[in-house]
Image (tube, rainbow, N blue to C red):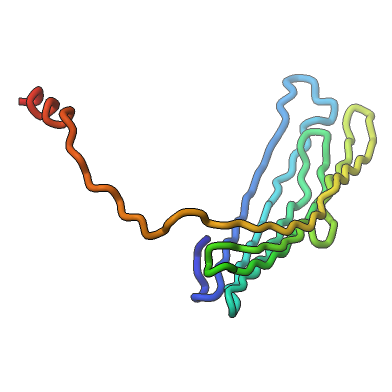
Length: 159
């Protein structure tokens, strides 16, 4: 993850922008509405003492209109902490997704005489505890390059 703000704090910030329209030909029926939307997100990782790392991320979606559907804004955030263990061969991680339990999809449909409001709220807050371990010998040397008959035959054919 880059860029580094300093040797203890890394951040990645993204801004996406979109604009979409519906081309209905000659029949409009209220489907030609359009509004641009922005999708900023920010992720921060902090290196803490004693092998700990902390991560915080947030994502926002601004309201947007696409055809007869007006999509409302949404927001979600997550946090996590990890610790190197077993001589840096293992990592123990605890994270919480959608910390504030705000992730949901809300939209209004206003087209062709239809007027409806929907809310879709799937379960999005999860607490996870993970352990990973690096197996194998990290001091293994690369094998020496061995020439095969293919290189010699290729060189002979190129001449």
